[in-house]
Image 1 (spheres, rainbow over the protein chains, first blue to last red):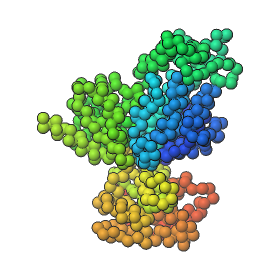
Image 2 (cartoon, chains in turn green, yellow):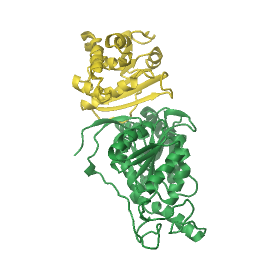
Image 3 (cartoon, rainbow over the protein chains, first blue to last red):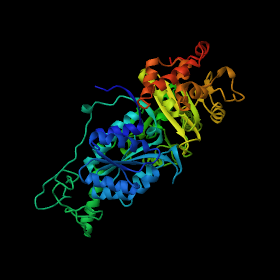
Image 4 (tube, each protein chain N blue to C red):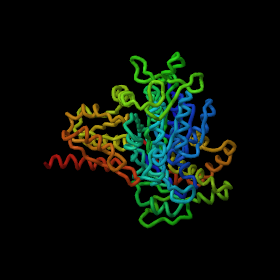
Length: 384
Length: 187
């Protein structure tokens, strides 16, 4: 059963989805174009027994989120590019200490303060490599208000399942867009609860991974059991170690818990690719113009389809590789100078030529430009 | 059919809210609607535009490239956005503005939107609601109930009567002949 259709903004759907997923703590520092997320959390969390706190800055916000999650509460923060940069050190702490949480980045244009109200997808690589050292990353990117609601729930689910920060990579296009949506009924949603372990006897092995699992179960801080959490490499007791065998095993497990579960983590949308000779690759809000262009191209008899990573990190390499044999060309369309392009080129290698249509001036790529680029690519192929 | 609407003016005039209300009314009326906006970093002043796309079918591209309808409440926004319009576009402006050269006056509906808000409704800040009432009457988009539902969801409780008055005064600015000439069907 679906509820009545309402007009909702992407940022609002992000909050409603997060609350449906069980988020009950939000700490943040407002920044355009993510501010509506903080505003709605401030309004809604007290209504559902949760807590909202505006911290003094983004560093503290991220620290508060880690603390809340450690205490047993599903926690979220939201920001845009400049704030995302500030959160990176503590995101790394979350990766190493295996603290589940969701970080929303509603991307805007430019490095530094840039064009605060203009769309961009320039944080794609920051989402992967923003914090230092080898570390696991899951990043999801929605392309509609409806998808924002469902996908933020998945962000929380993956975060809990793999005990890792999950980046929810929105952009100004989707964050500030309003659409009519009918929210799904709560019973139609799958919500992962946290794996909690209260008792491990005298061993205090809070980071011991049970047989057949990828991650240790969590012990909520403040509920009876004392244990140690650190950003240093640690053994199963949670205490620091300089033993490189133990540290190496830990780092490897952190990477493998993601790398070995790609089937579970990676999702893509593939539209009309079965008979396509051209795939347009895009993610997030860019998909709106791409879908319009693909439909127009099809109407004009061109065999064009869309390949849209929903899980943008890890990049869906296997899915794209499986499509290569049928393709004559790929067009990457994104609102940056060429970031996901690098991943697509890596996968396509020399087998399929990859064209690029990017924009980084704060304006939106219209469907006409994509169509024109598709025609150019097809035309130059015929000329050869 | 895809119907593209652009609302423009100065930051603080409420043109974003006007476009949100039209989108809200569209959803209440069972249509597809996508709304978005662009503005500068300033909270007040600065050019501001908001966009609503209406259709009976799913809307993919969310932005307006060739508006079928333009509302302009400042000269600066009129001069800028009147340059790119769809064929037969309707341009609604405050009657204190000068119609730029190159814009066919037959397309233009110049109405005393700001003066009506200030003098008849009694609050200049209702200009956006006056405009929404006029837009709906001129284009014949939604029934009264859907439009009021759109407004109701975005106004503070206790201001209903003021806003209904603004809607009615806005609608009254459009003559029957004008409404007949500018009516648009989404089919």
